[in-house]
Image (cartoon, rainbow, N blue to C red; front, side, top):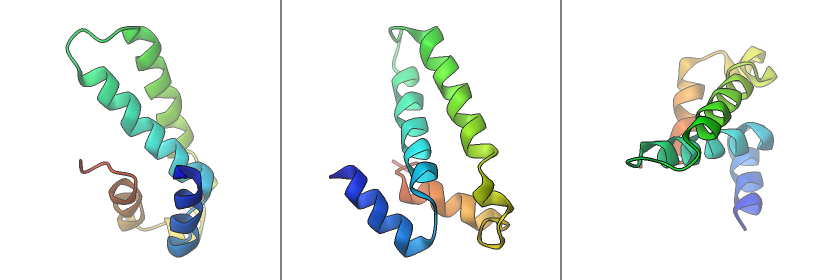
Amino acid sequence: MPQLRARLVSSTIGKPDDLICAQREWHATYRALAIPRPRHATLLRRRLLHLSLRIEWHPFWTSPAGWSPAARVELRRLTGGDR
């Protein structure tokens, strides 16, 4: 169901599915690291770094729709970054 919702959201706002999924995974990983004494902290930090790079260097940001800083804010808002 979340993947279906991601497709619907991405088609509505014009963002690629893989970018939306990566941002959602980033938020989930960040929340997992935020708890006191997380298990596998090193693995989670590496995962967060990997996802950060995937998001930052995604080709969408070089397209006209991705040039605006508002596009990044909208991506975070849609993927639950404001929870």
